[in-house]
Image 1 (cartoon, each protein chain N blue to C red):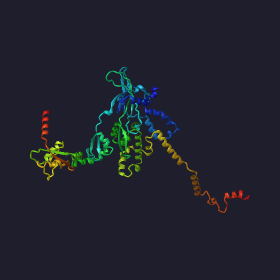
Image 2: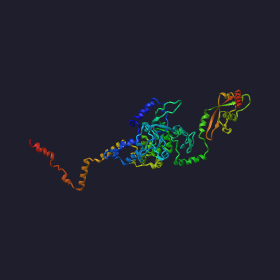
Image 3: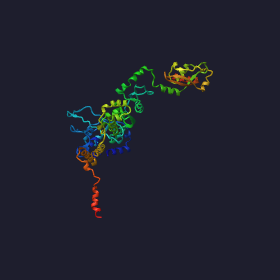
Image 4: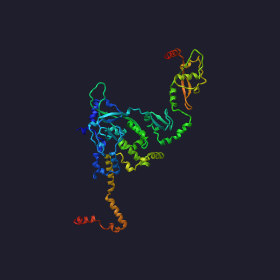
Length: 232
Length: 287
């Protein structure tokens, strides 16, 4: 009866009550002392004992991450037997229901002890390798070259072009095909048709990178340079 | 009138309603197994853990006016549990209903009391239980997830927590199924994979109960009564023996001991049967 009245009142009038959270509440009016040894819950509460004051709202607090042990290799997260600290959403919606991870008990820590020790001796493979492979295989790399001066395509040119797209690499990881010879005379053929450069991510993973040559826009560079000077 | 409208504590109500049934020796509640009755009394008398209020750490308070120390009383907040709470794992959370004064904003206005419902936020999750080897899509709260993390596993949380704190029908149903499966180890718990059976049985070894006790856990009183009626009916059926079987046994015993003479008992083929003699005497002779 009492609850029905409350619900109906809230539906029509009080929209603030639709907010959802776990509350901690304090009673404004004190309940009188009951005799010793008697259950407090037997006291018949009056309406003044239902006047509350909101003390704390636990739902709004930050939750943080959770520690787990992986039972299998997971891309972008870690290797088998590794202790990882992951955000809650990935833990509750991806890892735990699919049994890719478990909570770290003493039993599981011992079970995957051999796998964790074997990781040190193995060649290091980061879990982000396959993600980088996906991104690089979808990328079309523009290699900006100066048309006026004489040049032949080099590893440094591709390394710098990658750096413009925020991909850091070294000359050892880039493999140019030797039959490919691109100069300042035949560059127009490679503007339309793409050529492929191999890029090594790992000992195990390599990517075919699609590239094309683009004439360097001097005027645009000059504009950027002037605006950069003004900021300083 | 106001007393009737106000919500009361859930468990204290149920004590008053059910206590005469349990004590009366003629009623069916009296015949329930003793471990079930003991658990039910424990359920009624234990206080649940505080969820929506903070109990004070001190036991006493000083009243400076009179110079007397007063004991502090921790009165729990009344929480309402809707029907959806029984189908999920809310970790003891529920709806708190009460009155609140609005906060003062801008110019002064009269502060009337307004009704207020504080409701929990609910998430939909998928849980996997190791013992039952099955997935369950259940509603839960943030507090429940934190408690599962403390217990380190879904199965551990459900087996560890008391019925008072669990506050869900489906949770108690899972608890009962888990304990039954642990009791029927060799037939039900991974019967094809013997290695996994031992690993999981050793993991939850300290929860194991005998099968007779495990089947009764988490049953509501009316559910327990229906179960007891079924058991008593089956007992009656087995206890009542048809007289056909009883006489057959007796005769076999007499024959083996030699009380009956077989020659005397046999009907002679030359003599006429009793039925024929009666017929002849009464009907055929007259004609």
